[in-house]
Length: 162
Image (cartoon, rainbow, N blue to C red; front, top):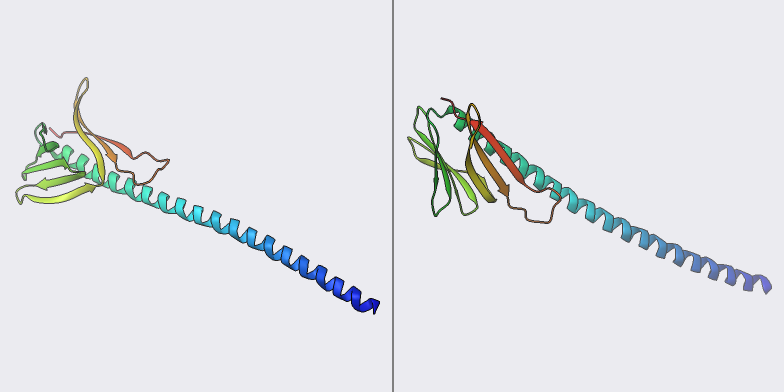
């Protein structure tokens, strides 16, 4: 009889241990899931930042190529709609216009308007006079959707061809 009582007590202790282990396991799984979700969120934000940087650099390199190909000094126009930079090439004019959060590129003679960069908070075209040459600068700030460690600021500089 005493053996049967001890067996019930051992079974009870084992049941309590099993419940404690199950509780500890659930806490560990909960913490690991929370850490994984935070890591996934940070990875997505990093990917968005990398995509934004790549888009901005691509648009900036195209702008620099257009400035280098221009044959006369670029024309800077600030009007109520936004900043506009007009570049004259042998094939016609290319204009960069910042309006309503987008930078548009219009190329003549077709006057085809294409989106150069979207999601722009601020874009400024500026003449940068130096001692022996006049350079042109494009200051660019992208919209940031979430709070991020990366502040999306870019500055592109180019010198007109002739």
